[in-house]
Image (spheres, rainbow, N blue to C red):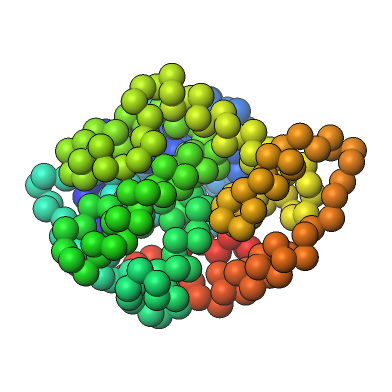
Length: 293
């Protein structure tokens, strides 16, 4: 998958997401000098290369050899940099991407995406953790009848995926940039009016995002899961499908008044959790990170 063939704007966003996430994982400030100091404390070879770190914070992509060194420290950074999201966000006129062909190469547990109600498609559409957002955009950009029903379903539900993904690191720090990029992309390639409830302005986007944050924060305070934000996102989506009224109730429950899992919801969660782990999602050689790792 040619993830290096991305637009200049998307490439800058990807580079900043990479270096900011490196700072978070290293436990240092998101500043060039702080990261430069941390890096030199953990590298045997010392170089007077402080200036280049300034450039990375401005959106210059680190060279492949340096990225490989980053991945040695934090392997999850590779999955971030290579994620299909960056390709999916790109217009990339010089490398005309065949979105139908790319969508046809998506595998869920070694199964291609079948019809809308196939097990592979249903499982993909249950994944609102941010690494799957790019796959949703790829499907939206397809043209063939093979993925017509997938596009129709996403036109009705994509906004949920986008808001929930924007509340997860590393997209949490680039919400407005993503909103601008996607608004332009959807208007050009999909017909923005067919994507229901897409916000008409930044103000509306931020207001709606606050509502999703409120719901997601209610999920966190339940303490039903560990401290893994991808799982909180997945549980929120499961609740929205199974019992949307319970979400409102949860959001208003004080943190010191815990409630038990509803038995029906817990059974659904356990069943889905097993499927998510047993059926990894891949595109070519890229493996979408497991939300339980």
